[in-house]
Amino acid sequence: MSQLPKLNLLLLSTPVGAIGSGLGGGVELTLTNIARSLINLGHAVTVVAPEGSVLDGIPLVQIPGNLQITAQSQGRDAPITLPANSVLSNCWNYARQVQHQYDVIINFAYDWLPFYLTPFFDCPIAHLVSMGSLTDAMDHIIGEVAEQFPNAIAVHSLAQADTFSFRDRCFNLKNGFDLSQYQFNSTPNNHLAWVGRIAPEKGLEDAVAAVQQLGIPLKIWGVIQDKTYWNHVRSNYPNAPIEYCGFLSTQDLQQALGQSRALLMTPHWIEAFGNVAIEALACGVPVIAYRRGGPAEIVKEGETGWLVEPDSITGLVEAISKLEKIDRANCRLDAEREYSLSAMGKRLEIWLDRIVQSHNLPS
Ligand code: UDP
Image (cartoon, rainbow, N blue to C red; front, side, top):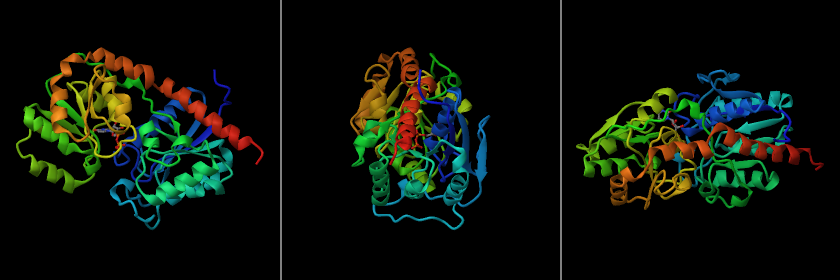
């Protein structure tokens, strides 16, 4: 049993999209899962998110304002920018006003402002960093917070932490999912799956190249975040057996994903975690991923999928040919062991306990 008292927590979502839009990527589901996990543990949770957000059964404060541009689409030396009437600054202005009602604020935004504001708040701020190192300005400000508040930073994988100079100060929260929402499917169809934001860093074209060689159909689910990139993939592989199936709710996605023989994960960046890997495993779907970033810490070779030399299409093709060696029941079991809401709840309470304790220390 945890010694942590019941906390009143304010969760601030990503300012790049409303919850439910898909533009916020994995952060949308991560925040929802963390909120549910904390509520299950008896804590009180309020979520602050851009206007238009949808969140079933969790208190939600919707904040108007213009969305933030995604950090991963900018170069390393990109300066920090905010649009006029920024939803990010509006969210944090709200948090500043209500902070005294809460024990801890949890920040899900990979943005400069919440890190910069951390020492100016009376309420401790816990930052769940959702991506690896992307820009010098972000590295610098997160590093300053890590220095001044040694317990304040959590990440999703060791590989993600390793992209930062303050790697040793990162708490590895991994992730957790409401597995009751995912149904195990032991009898898949022939097609393979690719799930994610359609944007260059996610490397969809490699999965398309592999299925073109094999002639196995590939179904694709996710928001088309970069239309130019998507058109580029389609024109480069005009005869690939691919089908774009849209952006689905978790309920519909798990149903469709469960019918797939395997999930292909082909990111070109260091994926911090890769929520879709666990969602696939929870449905009994093996994962074939590049040996890089979060997925390399999730996939157990020969048990829950195969890891492939990064950027190797031949490696993907070989792994697909070995799929029958994976027992789909093992995939589901693995998700239950490490990535349930209760498994993550234990990790969350350790992290929050450290933050509360260090905040209460005399300075
Ligand atoms: N997703 C979804 N519906 C879809 C396709 C994807 O809800 O049709 C969600 C999926 O559940 C996951 C997120 O999109 O939570 C993608 O997150 P991931 O961590 O894999 O990658 P990110 O977008 O954060 O880079």
